[in-house]
Image 1 (cartoon, rainbow over the protein chains, first blue to last red):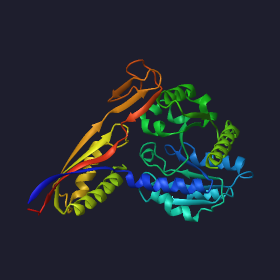
Image 2 (image 1 turned 135 degrees about the vertical axis):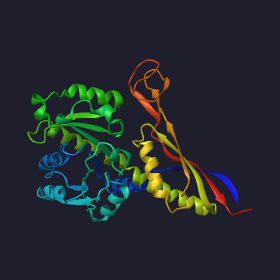
Image 3 (image 1 turned 120 degrees about the vertical axis):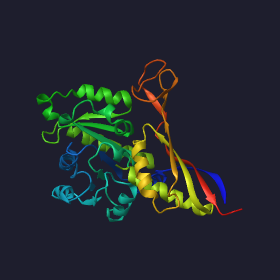
Image 4 (image 1 turned 90 degrees about the horizontal axis):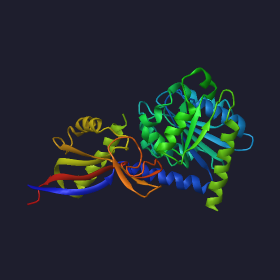
Length: 223
Length: 117
């Protein structure tokens, strides 16, 4: 019997990162901009996608992958807008992983402009898993409170875009959008911040324009 | 509770390494977990104890080294370590920081037993 130490130095998320890199390469080659939406449950991810569909579907081809623990409900809401949608039900898992997205990808039409992935509602675990997205958007809704960025650092540190959602409720709540934005920007100065209301439309045209520009940049970078 | 799926990938790595080195037993596992990795060391420990039963690592100890946040300041170029917030430069106080470390989630080494003489 011999005892020995074996140096491993392997990333525990290595397999996920590898699959995510393959997805990113594949989507880039098809000229698709992929957006990963990440937030707590009920902060307005599906409503945001519905409002974006209303503004973008005539000019752009969109598709949506929905992640939830159970039910097809979110995918049905997106399909009702005329947008193709695939539901991943994780059966208990608190986040999407790249291999789950990889399984759906062959069904997604090659000729689309935007692929939105709505992650499982959770401000913690999804932040650890790269899905091969081009842009990661974290949503913070006004009823959740403006103290969240520092309480859930990883989500805000890894995001490219911060969406302060349900801006129409701000007058009724002790939520200070400037404070929320300042706290998030102090942690991650490269965040693009938008205040939006999917219900009333505030900020939605600006957000749609931002995604359109990001798509143009992505395609210019590829050429 | 994504610690369970992380421990599942840990055991894939352990099985691969055990095969590669003809291990009959894994007696210790050492991980490096960054403060910003989004993983709770205690929960990793509980998930590890659940998973190891009946495997080559049954009875293995788990050591977790927690890696602090490490930043380089974009304003003054100074480097700082933080074990917890605030996220600002220890030298000039700026919050425009480049993250250098603290996202780690790495299997550093394992201790194995083999039948080799």
